Image 1 (tube, helix red, strand yellow):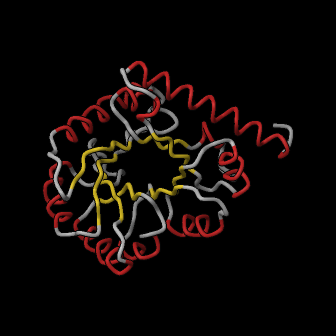
Image 2 (cartoon, one colour):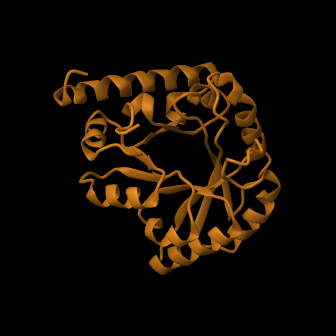
Image 3 (cartoon, helix red, strand yellow):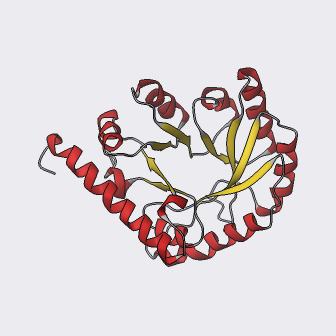
Length: 236
């Protein structure tokens, strides 16, 4: 890129490329691009970059950290859809509930209780996903699959929360195919959860810049894409 003046055009080109890849992956799986929501990960990205990709047609954005999310949501002048996709500590739940359309990372009954408390305070229904660690990696956040029933029972006691599916992160690997087994496992887990008042099994949030096409082939309805859409993060 020769200068900042070129970024709006670059944003349009990047968004079109990513959307084309989403459409091709969906087609390979017998699905359509409309089945998949692209969440642009804006971690460390300046508001000017978010504005450019918004002008190009992108409307859903995801942030990993509460403080950065709150600052951007409050400062962004457009009607965008914001998602919280990072690990959420209970003491920061108050700041994020009601500010985002969807929290992807619910991983404990204690967090469910705190989110319910904050949503009840605002008299809203907060949409959430349960995050599962399906690989057993200690460095990964998320609940163990064996804890899922307990979490769903916790959600049944949280009328101000609406769980709409599952989220996971695959291990980092330069080969996207390495992500297929954990993505397939999450899809299988979701398929075995009956719909209920506490849990609506509509979403699979999985897939990032390096493996989102495999995720879509395995059933992802939400893909969280940063660098291939937004470019390298400033300072990285």
